[in-house]
Length: 378
Image 1 (cartoon, helix red, strand yellow):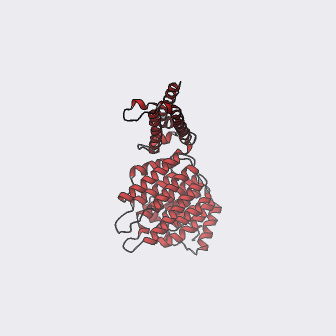
Image 2 (image 1 turned 180 degrees about the vertical axis):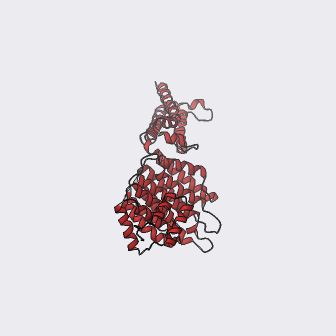
Image 3 (image 1 turned 90 degrees about the horizontal axis):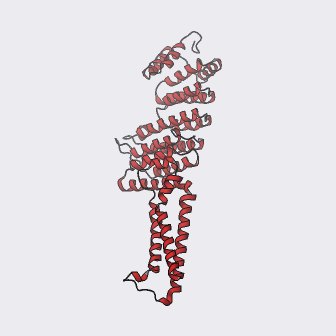
């Protein structure tokens, strides 16, 4: 009877252990989202190994207690200690069963948190690679970018954004002349793709978080800029400008018109951003989001002056306003009067040449029509 009990405990323990060996595959095939299964060429389930080691030790202990006489190097328990052995093996089995239930709870019931665990692992790997080599491992960057693109807007995307922000804050920006901060540029791009190129419905709050990170980056680049290496004019800033523009376009397509003040706030920190302001204002005008378009028209003149392009983009956007309807025409006239701008043949010619080089042919034609007798400069 006693021998049968020990054999039963050992058999059940082995069965449970064998089942747990296949648990990672079960989780991967049934509970993980398709994008997580496709994403990784790496092993992000290393924590499974540690838990299996605990269960391995418990299984070995159960076998050693159950069959000590088969191991010549182990002093066998005397027969009078049979009740003690039965109690000990029962305790070990209960511990193994409890560990198994905890294991199942973590990897099955809480499987929805698996994405967050993978993001956390990738973040640690990126930080470790940066500490060792001074560079971010491109393979892990690809994986976290994939997670960002295929995550659902809201909490899932926020997990990726927060991980990227933490990695970014640990990067040391190099202000040596002639060198690019490739790691920072890549992080800026991944943040953009997570909110602007996501295959899932976007989230306004996620875009706001990314724009806040961009603003902090620009402030740091401006602070670290030197005469030898003006970072605020470098590739890092250009990447932020391009990504901010993409986020602006994505928000306009999703009718997040309240995002524009934040977009304009970021672009106002970037020298040479009037071209992006022009594109944003033009798209807003075409989509009938006139409040956004008028805000851009107001911002673009100041930016044109600072960028030393003699208000070429301002004239171009004003021309689109002027021929977009009577109300829009009135808005353009008021803007010109309020800013005390007088349309001159020379200024319009420079604006036409500027937009012609950029192949903005429609804009060139509209600026040319401002020379008509009923133009605001007439």
